[in-house]
Every structure is written in structure tokens, then in C-alpha cells.
Image (cartoon, rainbow, N blue to C red; front, top):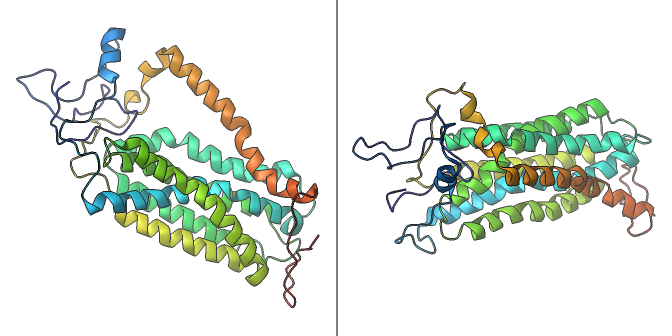
Length: 333
């Protein structure tokens, strides 16, 4: 497959289908540009066409443009506000159980966090296809709106945030569903936009981006627990929402793909092959891999959601005392 050495490959995992425009066409050469997959393609030809492209010989090991590194920072914050917020849900769940929704079934609380995870993962194929078509700014802007809106709505959905005033349905809708929609826009965009800049250091770039989820899993719980004891639940959520909003706006202006990146805009958005690469499901290794990942996520985040409450109930951790003169209902142990 011939390709200009100054062009970066399309987003990871993407392929050209019948309903899409080829990123480059040349009547004098049939092998220029991306392949067009047909149902009659021989398996060996398909394997050769989908083999990952190597970096061009003149592709630098490290990018010299400052925009590459500001993009990396922006993508870091996209992951910070997607899986990072999912990782932090355990702190919210623990507070709901002991304060806002005392006596509620833990399974119902887990449903809030699992809704976030489900929306993020189930919409990834839709978000990825829109991203391939070059609408990254639209996705980031939409995600920023929904994540910020969901968190601010959570701060007004539970009365004064006092003991027993929680409303489970509104918590599920605002924190689970609305913020989940925004996180879905961030998740795929974060790693794939960064990858357009760092062709020869793609693993490094995606690793930096992925660390945003882990760091947010430290920052947001500590921040939330401290602010709840200082200013109450509603104001604490507003402060968290402000951080989410500011970092998302920063990502909107900095997380931009490489200018030479090739986009794959479909000729007809309603075609099935625009959204689903049916050839992939004919690969047994791919299908087994998907099944394994599915079972992995089936029990993965339940640990994160329940670990804090379990540690406190089993004596492995303690809940801090409420500061004197400010009663928010937290009891020290």
C-alpha cells in the first residue's frame, strides 16, 4: 500500500467499507489510498490490507511541534473526565449509602456506576466512526456539555444534601446516564486523537493518556471527601463539576488531530458497513478476544464501586470525623 510519507494513518481499528469515500483516489493506480473492503475479498488479501502500517522513514521519533504536546495534555484530560470519573464513583456510592440514601440496596447503587460504564462502552463504536469522519471537536464539545451538565444537575437533585434527602432516580439519571453520555464522547477520542501525532511513539502517547483515568481516580475521591466535610455534598459536587468543566474546555481547544491526518467520510451514513465492519466478526480470534474483554468488564468495576465501603465496614479504613460546627451527617469510627 503506497502512502505519502507525510500522512499519518487513520484512527486505530478503522477500515474502509463500501459506503465510504476513499481518502485518496488516483485513476492511474488502483493501489493508492486506503483499501475498499468487499465481501468477495480473499482472506489473505484482507489480512494484508488490514495489516498495521509502519511509520514513514522520515517520521521523527519525537514530535517537535508544540501542538503535539498540548494535544497530549488535552487528551489526558479527556480520559481524566471519562474513566477517571467512573473510577471515582466508589466515593460517591459510599456517601450515598451512609448518608443520602441510607438503607438502599447496594446493587441499586452499583447500577449508577455500571450505567456510566455501559454507556461509555456501548457507544464507542458510534463515537469512533464519527471520529473517523473528522468530527473530533463536535464530539469533545458535546462531551463537555453532557459531563458538566450531569454533574451540576447532581448538585441540585438531592434537596439540601442532608441525611435521607437523596433521590435515587435523579442520581441515576444525572450521574449515571447524562454524565455517561459525555464520557462516551471522551473515551475513544482521547487515545485516538493523540495517536495521530505520535506515530512512532503511539504506545507512549496512549499510555500517557490512559494514566489520566488512574490519576483522576486519586484526585476526585480525595477532593470529594474533603469538600463534603468542609462545604457539604451539594457544594462539593459543584466544585468537582467546575474542575470537570474547566479541564474539558481546555481539552476542547488543545486536543486536535494532526493537520495531515486522513479522514474517512462516508458517502452514505445510513449504510450498515459505515458503522459495522462485518469482516471482523468472521475472524475467530477477534470474536474470542471480544468475549474475553466482555467477561473482564463484567466483574471489574464492581470492585471499585464497593471497595471503599467494604474497607470501612471491615475495619481496614476509617471515615474521618465531621469538622466541629458543620454537621453533614458523617459519623466517625
